[in-house]
Length: 313
Length: 303
Image: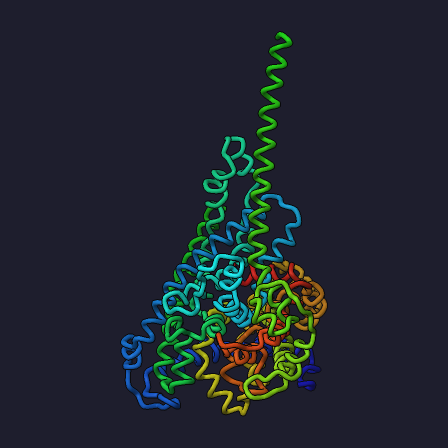
């Protein structure tokens, strides 16, 4: 290499770029290689691998014996998976609507030129810095009927007060919904607030001059302009919901019975507890499919918006 | 205009001003009332856990978890740290805490450095196919952890990295690469290309430009990335619980093992202290770098 690089300059020009120059030109690519390999393996090989496993007879250990899509049909006829899937659906709707509603409310409240703005923001957002495990554990205690919120209210005199979400099969899912909203609404708030701050002050002034009250100003003027933020928050929260795992494990461990089992718990259970790896892999693919249903239209939406903006500018 | 008419006019104005003033006061009361109401919901769980970590158990059992403390005893923190039994071993959560540190710090540093290099290359040294590589890395952000469980289990087994912090470091580096690259690339894209071109004309190469131009303006994005990675990796649970066990587990996995008593009677005070120990590092990072934390959040979400 060194001998090459001190070669006569004229000769190097005639022979095209020298090895050293070529090496210098290739440096970015060479530096990138480890990351490229890691990414390609992580994104494509791992996904392909899991698809492949889902099409084999893998039980306790991964095996190569092909069985076609049987794991998928088994999955969709498994009562446990149906419960998990229904739970995910119910949870996603309530959690996303709840977190967005509260997040928007908080953002609008903070947007009213309140004092100590950063203090409020810090309070509403800190749950996001804490792990789902910590949140789930602590809320599990608060829901505990003997010593949590129910006990407190009964001690205050309302002896018939009942708030024991986690102990009943019918209500345990709502405990997870409430806790999920508690954890994530600050996140929605932060994004909404960033959106509200980016709204052109002139159109707000114009609305005031036209005599619109604060409610109409928000509902007719401000909120429609931050529609992209709504969609972004929606997509991110749906992603969180689909990946829900830690929170449920820490809060209810999927119980009572199977009442709060989720797709991500099902994967874990099939792969590492029950020795049905193929079905676990099939369930993991379903999680990926759910994410794709959310993210692919979003990607198209982003492209469409960018094109429209490019046309308008 | 007669003086009585002026007085009447003033009175109308006064009445209007007074009612506007009243409306303003009422709206302020409603706004601050709601803010305080929501704040209490957000903050009370934290306060309850902090108080319970100092309360004696008989008192908790008698008065419930949410009650004004009658006792103050810091011994439970010591027990949680040093002697409490988690999953058969009675050495507190200190080992798990150090596991989490040993996992989080290297994984954060490595993934951030790689992300900065990648971001620099993918924004300033584009080559044929670099956009495609960036798109692949973007996909990595969205892939659910469940999908990579079996492949990781196999690879870690082959590399003799199961039940070890090094295995988790590897996983978090590979997984984190997508996020850190995305963050840094979106930051570096806004650096004017002319600046780089001028440097190249002056004879500066790849590394010189990186260290003389890119690194000096990088602190904001590096802080965002480090905070994001640190909290994310520290709080991660799935890989920790699956690929490690017992004394090798990070603290999130240990906390679940400790809380798995479920609704049965357990030492709420020691458990509260343990939970706070597990929540402390990311909370510290959040309170020190809150501004950057929010910035990372909004970038990670919208871009």
